[in-house]
Image 1 (spheres, one colour):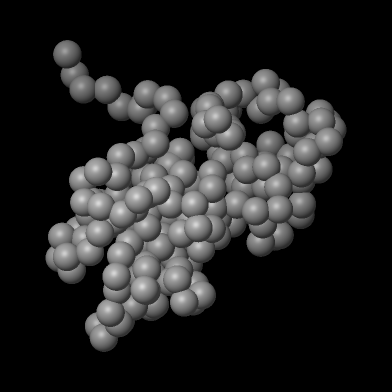
Image 2: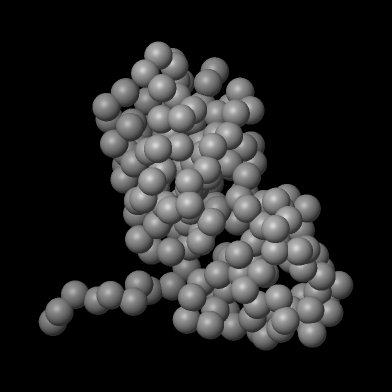
Length: 183
């Protein structure tokens, strides 16, 4: 079974992989199809898709889900979702939530100082962005260029929910979006 896996929810852009172990990455979430194209090409047979469903940037999550749904409908493939927080190993994931906040396991959004991180090894773009605060609170944060900070799409495959219709994979929003419809 060959499964395409990708996540677009973090500031690291789009990470993409195949269940066969191949990986690709783009700097922007909106370029996820370039990473998919690099891995899949025209001749690869796929059996399913796993997509990271957040938490993360509202727009980036929507990009990932839209691409998963489009590919699913065009190719007739089932889709499964997994939390972006599940794409990290070797430490506790902390993602940059903007607005001076982070996404942490739970999942929850909070100010960095609200997390009890004493003695923890933190990974992810939020750990890098708030390194000083976390290290002052007793956490360890690997160097900025450590690969543990980048989501691993193959971990999403291991931790994905059941495969089914693409429309059943819902985004994992932990807080309300910034944009609101006009009244």
